[in-house]
Image: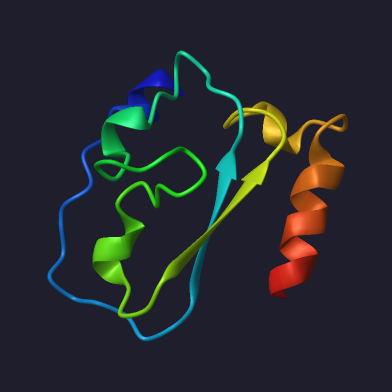
Amino acid sequence: FKANAQLPFPASEKTWTVPITLLRASDSNPHYNYTIYDDANTSTVQSTLGWQRYAQGAVDVALVAGDHITMLAPEQASSLANQLQKFI
């Protein structure tokens, strides 16, 4: 898990016309600290973690319970499912 979190993602010049929604974990995990990708001068609720550079329109950000791993745990899964239902 730790090595995966440290993989570099190459920047792309291409932008997309499709809607983009970031389902972001509301809690942090020390092994998955993505705050270095937060958009400058934005709160956690507003930051697209850099996805805005790939979008021609606005990126929706929805917080879900848990962290990067526990958001799929039974206790948190309903929060993720509720957010997913809004977009599918």
